[in-house]
Image 1 (cartoon, rainbow, N blue to C red):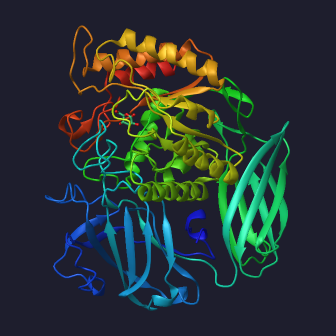
Image 2: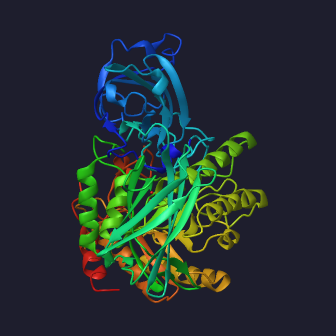
Length: 594
Ligand code: GCB
């Protein structure tokens, strides 16, 4: 049910929220016997685990474990929740999860890094403790996204992921219980901002469950309070609010209005939901991305949710630190590589004026596989696109959706496929763009292209995004040659497609503390010079509209010959967030004022 993704659970006079974060019971189930043995009736001989948090690093022997596990906790449900729909929302179960309440099955979900929820009202006991059991499984598979176990490719590794970040598993984000009002409640709110001269326009679309026929929107902020009535027809209502002399949202002044939606009216509401949003427009011409009609240059990073011991687990201190460090370098943007992030990232970006390219978990997407696997993967990405847009659509910080990272046409081993082209792969891929454009006309859409990928695909996105490592994976050791290749390639692409270009990844591994007087691969000097050379090329092309360094920080990977010690060292910060030379360099360059 979309309502469980669209509106994040909140606590107010009509809605309750209970966070179940803490220490849970945990048991691995390598031969998947727990189901037949009824482990959902209560775990025995279990160990303990922190939720949120990946399971891989919390134990001494679970790092590479990718099969079934069981989680269990208890929650006391107060009597005053009785009579209201009660939901269990799991904010990330990587990769698939089955859920039981008090031993009764309530649902199954597949897909990582997006929330899902089940109505558990009929299964709970009031004024009593309830047992919550979640079976999770993280098998890597060619039919899943992120993709695993597709043979070949330069990321051949153990565990066998078709991407380099470590396949951290489990309940990586919080699990919560929440209620909505009984008879009628708000299911979804879509905010569509626009500008007309000095006026701001905000279209508010509301979907409700129930029979209330009227509602009300109150927009407030910047000394204004604007009321607008809602009239529901078949559960839907829409109104456009005009804001005179609007204070536009932009990185330099990320001003947020609050939008309060009531069912009934604000004097006697039956449900209330409040959101913060910014009024801004995003558009594109042949050379630039425009925010509120003004050209924009994206300076920033690709990132990961990755930290020692936590794995991919939610860590608010790390989030705060990362925003501080990004600001310290002078960055204004990031891409949620390679999956939607925890929701607090987007809230912070809204408030702090960061721009986000929101990416689905479509990574390792080799168009090689049997047709059943390809069909499953296609369906999974369609679902991810819908869920990501449902969840993140009201954030002014999100300016562009990215439907896939480095999809490969046919079996592209290494970077030398020479742009092989397959019409079926193209058509399948085009469907994702159609879906985004149908669901959200207010933002841009892109995909991120791999070196050697088919150039025909650049016809699809609004902005051409490419990851380039000339001078690293090819022409290793030769930065000038790499930069020259980049320069030639950029000109060629722009001449042919006449669209703005972002280099969404470029970078070099630097082992922290390794130095060379004459620049040499894997040293901090090489990384810094590589980044400098690429930024210089970009500065000489007025159609380059952004540069995202790969990566913000070093991160854990699977084991393979191109990942020394099980890490990707392309971070400009170490994994524990200490700056390398490149971070200092970016700080001086990006603060000059681009
Ligand atoms: C890429 C991938 C990214 C890798 C990076 C690398 O193109 O998009 O996930 O980590 O290259 O360092 O090789």
